[in-house]
Length: 196
Image 1 (tube, rainbow, N blue to C red):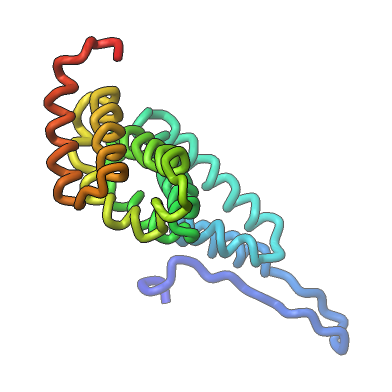
Image 2: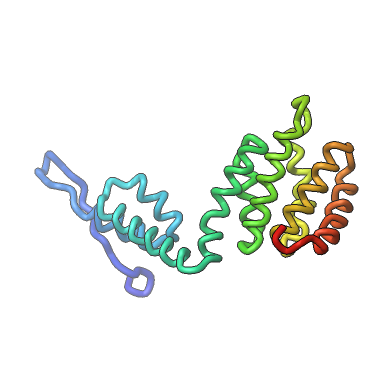
């Protein structure tokens, strides 16, 4: 069986009638955890009784985090899914949209887009006098415009997005008009002082 099997792990069950103790389950659990992808092994280890398997899963988790945290892009990638899930839950009541968004965004755009999402939420809270301004579905309409020009300088991006959004809500503009006003404000933002 050598060409089909990497290793053989004997497993013996407990039998009181034969006065036999169970053995081999820790080795099997540890090898299972080591053989599958880290994210899946972590979930599997939560359900295993084997302390050794949990330690193996913990070691792999630590190694994955250490590798990711060795670069700024890795840190952003590490936090973007929980961050967008949290923001999505605040906007829509469910974190699923945030998870999908995080998977589709390049890591370098995450800080700008997350900041613009929080600005959107806070402006909606500030301007929502009659309680009907910002509905959960609103974020789905705004999203295509919000992610545009995320490669522009963050300060200009936030200023232009905020100005366009206030106009959109206070003047009851269409999404196409918001897109146009955002582009106009981005152009105007280039003339602003650098410290703004």
